[in-house]
Image (cartoon, rainbow over all chains, first blue to last red; front, side):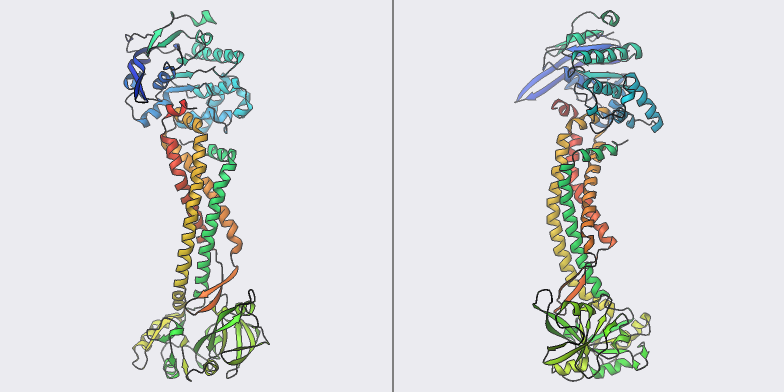
Length: 244
Length: 389
């Protein structure tokens, strides 16, 4: 169950308390996030919406340990990440977070297989085990036959599928999607959202997604709006099944 | 685990035009570095190979070169009876030597260059066993005849068998050519020491050095102790090989310092080339680096990854530089030997150690050129890097 009032239980997978982020530009403090609270349970699918500059990506970066807050805490699966050292945070990201970016962010000189294998290089899996995991992840996203293709040999939708396979291959605690369909046509966007929805429904993944697209946001269990630095529930949680 | 090396290999391949600039800069620097040092090595090797471990050279006490020394025939006679001196069919194996410098025109330029003329004893070939006559015959004692080293014969006009040359007021016949195994003697002209003294109007029976062939290399200390403690003699004794090694020191140091200076200046340019290449690599691949760091690769992994790339570029540059100068190995050139004021022919000597030194130099340039960009890539805030894409 997703809550934004700060009254969630300690059992929540993700707990955000009084989170604040302030940037300083041109001698002026810009308070992007202010006293933000959020509770997300395992298996939740949350969409964040809001106008440009509202702090959606900043929030995602803070949740993913890519940035540090000015104040407040983020706790994931019992680990309070806001005070971790850079080294520990890097290791934590490798273990707990799967990133899906708008521009896919695949490494152009590596094949689809090698791109998906990257997160596994940070684990103790053997080469054979890594191969098995990569093949499984690529099969899940429907690209088992394209594992030796380079990103330039794939369409945008296929590149994003590879990126999704890379995000799930190490079985992270949750997925962070930053405009995952922002660079795709409607048909490809629908396919990608179908895939992400399937990851939530069939594989029980927890997904937090930033989007500008209301159609895409409707796929989520709940859509939260960022307004003046705090999260506001846009609508009642809805069933994924009812939307699909 | 580190970022896979295949990423670096393919990244270099994908951006080969930029990498080529750095590779060529490093190759040029390493080439000059190796070539200059091979010149110094060749010069030194040529002089060192002139000496033999079982020969001792005797000069006046305090003299550092033959040009500054003199030794009387009486002293030579005392040396003949010293312990440790080897004997041949015709008696003690000692060659009393006088040296002079004579100008001969270089075949290559037509200009005169000084050649060392060495007056020796007739038994010199039994003392310097690395010297072999390869053409003609040995000079006859008492006659103005010359045998010339093979480099001297090939470098100077007129020093061929059957020719006659004039120098020192004498009229000399070239009767033979000898091969001294690539040593400094190959650049010399030899004649009878007494005739040389006579032609140059020096006091009779005065030489500049005596080279003694010892029973064995182990006899050196006994011989030296004996002659240096003999009150009738005022001489210094050196192993012949040490004497020539010492002779090479000044020139070798000069070439090494000059070569090092040139290589250092070029190295600065090459490092800037590598810096430019690696900084542009970091700038162009900001997204890739930020993504890998988001995936969980740490700053040290990124540093190592970019250093591997810099090392790869510098290794290729180093290898190319070494390969480019390899044909110089054995190529004969010449320079003034300031110890004898004569022209000395010697060959570039590119040794495995020198090539390893060149490769290490290239890797140092890669490290210096690769580290700052690698650090920049590794410690740039990931969120900032992702936002600026």
